Length: 172
Ligand code: GTP
Ligand code: MG
Image (cartoon, rainbow, N blue to C red; front, side, top):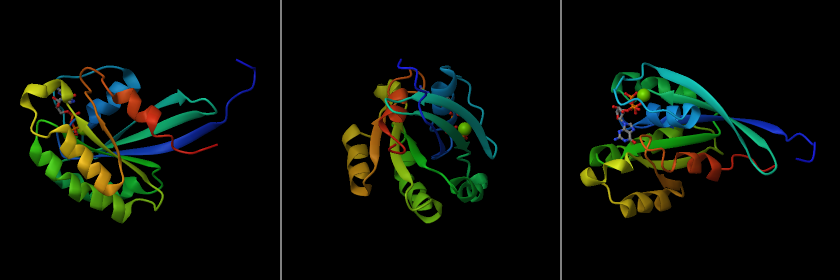
């Protein structure tokens, strides 16, 4: 500590992806360090927040966790307005959720700000026995779209903090 206070930056994070891939679980793990086994679908969207200290700044991540169910899909563009970071999440044990990532990425491109930083997240790596999406397949799609890529488990916590530490939203 040198007595100087760090600049505080706020960034809006929007989490998208199919229903049940673990968007809420990821947000809850990051902000509350807890996990809920029981599935309760998100209605509309939910909000949570956490601040992380970086070398030269404090970043407040204001997270909008959207609902993946089809009937809420029309709401997503509204949340993407003013977003700094978007996480497109799939479930590594569901190839279908991975295939649908393309349509989520299209939404981000269409409705997100020009400088939106996008990341592709393969969640539920604790379910390796049930894996349907090889890591390399995720990596290839991420590379193809120029996205940051990480595999996570909201259940064990693996990879979650890394996502937020690695995506440096703004250089001060
Ligand atoms: P919607 O709100 O409907 O869009 O779903 P969601 O993407 O928010 O999924 P949610 O976080 O509610 O998780 C769905 C189910 O998957 C729940 O039963 C969670 O406990 C479970 N789940 C989420 N993340 C993980 C994980 O990393 N590992 C395992 N094993 N289960 C997980
Ligand atoms: Mg949810």
